[in-house]
Length: 307
Image 1: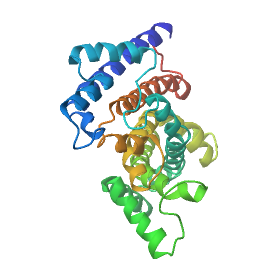
Image 2: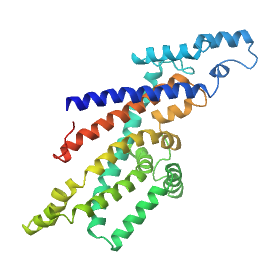
Image 3: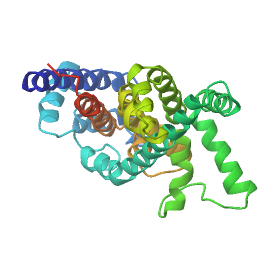
Image 4: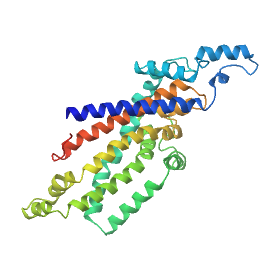
């Protein structure tokens, strides 16, 4: 276990370094943010002075080395537009807004997927199974932003403001964005649960449990579902990471004040520090979730050993 954790830690450092390095160079291909901070009538001397204040007058290699040295200390610089520490701004929007939205979507996509997948597997080839598979295909095919717009039109316009279309404040504001964000992972989880259950329901230990007189509910949820849970655990852990990154779109559609929306707003203004800090947090969350998923394997299936 210790060797496994050490390898994953080294892997996490390498992956995070790679991500922030790629983003560092990519954002600088978008142009010079200096022109967003000076008037159109600014002289060349004023432009050069502003560029020097931002540290953009130095060679790119020097900027990169300075960036890495500061990033190791958790310092991603000051927002070009807001004049505030970039990491502080990102964390303010990440917690609780983005975490709250992703957690709500994760609960929806997991809690609903298990019973729906089990019902589909137990009624294979019947109308309930066909309806579940068709609904899953439909949900996985829809872009999240389109679904979000349709939900706004239905619940906020057609139904006379039954649910808020944007903003935050109450649980009602959370319903539409969390549903839009959870739709695709929910469909994927239902299909995974169904496939896993179909595989284990024909195993000898399931037939033995039934022959011993155990109730069908206990056979399904105590024996079969636990052994079919590994793929679901993998996808659920990764889904949370994708939900956090997918929040860029959903938060923009619903004007949700999270980290994703903050990054989207920073891109047109070329606010390099905010973009870099936000991507770093996303990368770190992905890495941590991957390690957590591997550790959960041993809980779900004692036969799995991490070496």
